[in-house]
Length: 382
Image 1 (cartoon, rainbow, N blue to C red):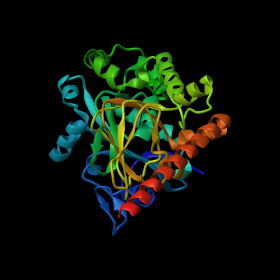
Image 2 (image 1 turned 30 degrees about the vertical axis):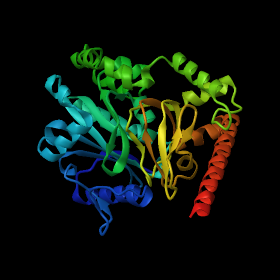
Image 3 (image 1 turned 90 degrees about the vertical axis):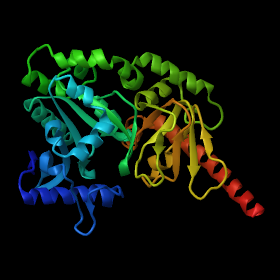
Image 4 (image 1 turned 180 degrees about the vertical axis):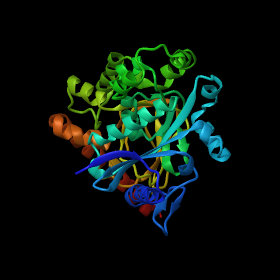
């Protein structure tokens, strides 16, 4: 069985790549993606011609993809350049004259490879290529369930979240490729490649980034903040919660374990955190602030969820489309628990997850009873 990471070059390979995208995004994730050709079963756009498309090829099949688009090439597509500027606010990075920028997109992995080391190999090959091509900053828009993975690679949050086309609620992140100190801090697999490609060297762009974006990092990049303080805040929240909550029956140690396996995500008033029918699989725990939930086919006032309450639990358990719109009512903080992390914890921390899943079941039962009462009242009044 041969497995290779390569850059697509031929027309035939590109056609196979576009069909693989369609299988993952449309057939698998049920996304209504721009550039999808439903007659031919393929996804492509104008950036493919100016980008480097990396693929994982195993037994002569494409099972993973990732795309790098360089800023100087992107400028040849003015509409996309303007769109990316709106999403990533990268103009200061260009004006700093520190070097080249690139944008990572179209990351897709076949289900049979998820959890394997091939994902890290794909990222590492793209990292090496970007470094060799003189890239200093790489941007991506990560969905909440992928943000923790990108953070482990060395990407950091530096601005507000976005609601991006049909992809839903995404998190703009940036990686300073030659920031060895940060790569070491987060245990990034890129650190080894960086040392091989660039022995110890002072990097002007690292100093520039920290000088200009430290305040933004402290505001948005909660993953980099003091873990002991974060654990204390979550433990305090667990003690405050009463009734049917995600923390019921968990010891202090288990609360900390759960917290360490989530991704902290700051949200802002008006953020559309979940769109109805989104095909995403993460669950959210509200640690600060509140959100409004409007369920499908349920009239009346929306449900307000605050500290200690959860949403997105149906997607976590069933991997089906979202059943409600969730919008932030004020600035706050949520903890993101992904389906992949939950499945891993079931194997490694079965006691913890048994209690968590029991709590989710109780919360769902309580909400189902409440919905039934609303529908019953509506029928009586109607």
